[in-house]
Image (cartoon, rainbow, N blue to C red; front, side):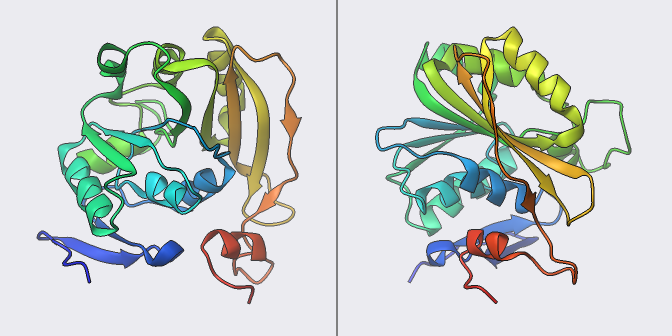
Amino acid sequence: MTDWLLREGERLDDLVRDGMRIIQREDEFCFSIDSVLLAHYTVIRKQDIIADLGTGTGVIPLLLTSREAVNITAFEINPVMADIARRNVEGNHRGELIHVIEGDYRNAPLTFGSGAFSSLVVNPPYREAGSGRMSPIRGVASASYELDASLEDVFKVASKILKYGGRITMVHRADRLADLITYGRAYRMEVKRMRFVYARKGHTAVRILMEFRYGGHPEAQVDPPLLLHKSDGTYTDEVLCMFGKDRQ
């Protein structure tokens, strides 16, 4: 049995998948269902060398290992979150599969060189700096707003560390679709798959899942819509399966 090291203000939550658990703290950004959606939308191939740009608690790499990913580098600029991510990796015995790096992923090209990864996963800050109501808590604000890195930075870095033909899979706000396509094309990233996410039937899309290919041709597959909730507010069967729960 693992002895989890918890610091002041931290809690240990159940991640459900593979019996994993995860340390989180309320004064930093806690993962949401978006991370779960992204981890399950990402295609895992046997020889993939994966990078998570802005890993937070490390939740996405952990979930990817439950889908047989075996080589993941997780970048995190916030030292508090990087420490939590490392302890989550160790606590769940994933140290041989996930390597957490504390630092700015925009420096990754200098460390890893060109074409080091075949797959990137990103759950980036959704809002541009100066828009909306920003949290006074720095860790929460930087995870929600483009304070440390912009959406364009994501594609710029991807164009340097992703091998030609490699994939970048992302979850973002549906209303930023035009920005996503525009920035992607500026760095030779073409959308190959996309799936709109809706809170429930009859509502407008709140999120979009997208897979880009570096050097891909401009032809995209639009997947069936993903509904999060039934009319009674409970999760749909598809979402419950992502959490590793049996159908209710």
